[in-house]
Image 1 (tube, rainbow, N blue to C red):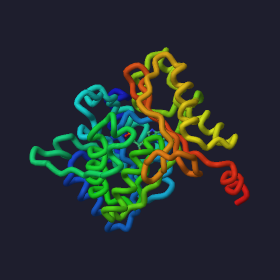
Image 2: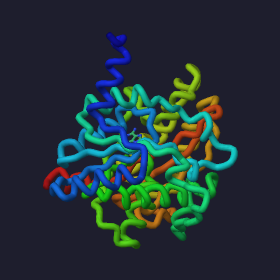
Image 3: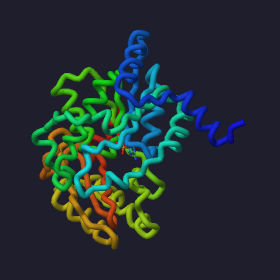
Image 4: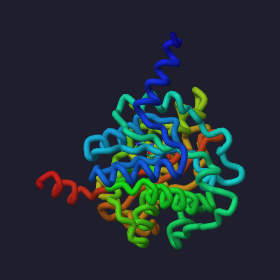
Length: 306
Ligand code: AMP
């Protein structure tokens, strides 16, 4: 008789179909397509939390087959970033995923995704060097390459992403549109802790004191929303007030605070409905990002009327 944790694990693996090779995932997807099964896809780097699970649940509702990828993509990490230390919790991820009725987990090795001869890059001019791209050069090229590879392999009908990584969603939508990738991209709202902190695998790095400071990102975004609600549209004023809130938290170091157009990511001088307030802040050594979509009150009342 096997000890029950091992049985649990075996059970999980049998039900889940963990696929690690490119050939196997291609074969499996081919079979699904032959069966006219619709495919929902959730790409992740693992260390799963309720934010990821929200995407998976939506995919489960809307598709016959759900594929989740778990791949900590070396290409999107800079030299001095946290690739080595990024949380890897595969056994727990499998437990969580299996409770959501996921059909396939794709978990390739880096050598499977990027063999020695690999040399292709995907450049998104005007989008990749703004906001997070300024302090993370090459990050969005890495994201674009891996997402395009995964979309080519999984061939999903719908792929699900979180609004928390707003710039990433803009890059991916642009990529899919520019290169005519046949997939629908769905972006779901950010899932937060009770104190407003956006869930993130990187929150695991925060010390107890830093955890208390971290909600300052959402507090600043809430201030931006409140200012817009009182009719303030001047983004300089809004950014300044947001900065004051973040500066009050001891361990916080602002990387950027900006209000931008949701497609071009260009800063806007005056808020229009649909513009996005974003910020990146280092809390201690941990770089956190967050954003909210701003709506002018008139547009909000119109939405409510509809
Ligand atoms: P990651 O594993 O961090 O690469 O994230 C995988 C997907 O989950 C991305 O589309 C993220 O935007 C999304 N995601 C991460 N955190 C959250 C969150 N708090 N709420 C909603 N989606 C999230």
